[in-house]
Image (cartoon, rainbow, N blue to C red; front, side, top):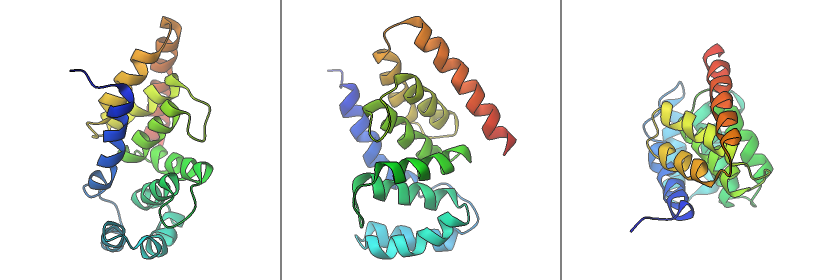
Length: 167
């Protein structure tokens, strides 16, 4: 039986926490301490550790904080705040942030629903190593109503890739 795009997107969200483990940048030990706090349910401690890292541009910490804001973990739900953090991390090539941004566009959470943007961000997530990106991308592509949307998605992917490579 084929699963619905919404149930696949739910699986994607639950995979984020595990996927955050594998990406590596500068503050690995500090990020790991925050991740341990997060996984232990100490969201206040995770936020305390990740906020300064995120402020210094650590993409994993930005993605982690974005997830917390998206889900209202340790702080009230804040879609706009989550979107901003995901965008900052996504522009650095952080695949999980790209995936979460795509999911936000797919469902219209804190953004105007757009399958074009959902497709583009999820395609980038897949390109950057998150295999769940293909599920999100395919769900967005299957939800488009005409070929012009798909063409726009492909152009957007190329533009975002070029911007990412400039960093």
